[in-house]
Length: 117
Image 1 (cartoon, rainbow, N blue to C red):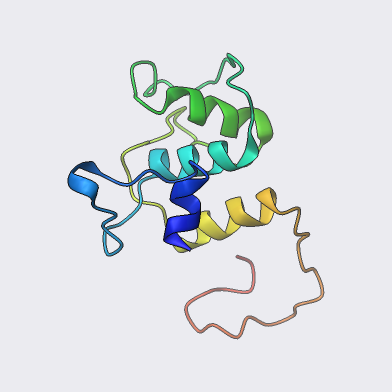
Image 2 (image 1 turned 45 degrees about the horizontal axis):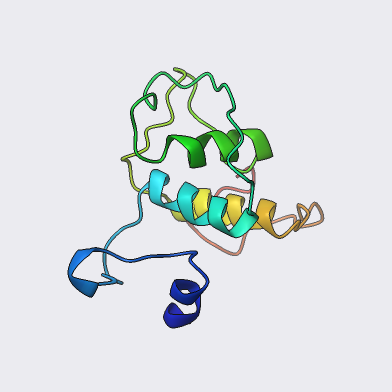
C-alpha cells in the first residue's frame, strides 16, 4: 500500500528515502494527502485562518477549507503543525469517501467516547 500511494503521488515520504511509518501525522501533512487524493486543482481560496499565510501546505489547507473536509478552530487558526487526532482523521476520511453520519447509534461501544461525540 505504501508503494501504491507513493507511485500515485499521494504520499511522498521524507528525505533519505524514508517513509517514517511510526511518526505522527500533522494537520498540514494530512491536508496535503487529502488534497492530492481529491485532485482539487489548486484553486486560490481565501480562508479565515491566520496561521497559514506562509506555510508550505497553504494551498492544500485552502483546498480542505473549500471542500469542507477539514476545519480550523474558533480562534481562526488551523494549527497546521499540530498532530491529527484519530477523531479528526476519521472525520476527514468520512468526508472524502462520502460516508454519511450514522444517526441510529444510541450508545458508543468505546468507553472513552461520549455518545454526543
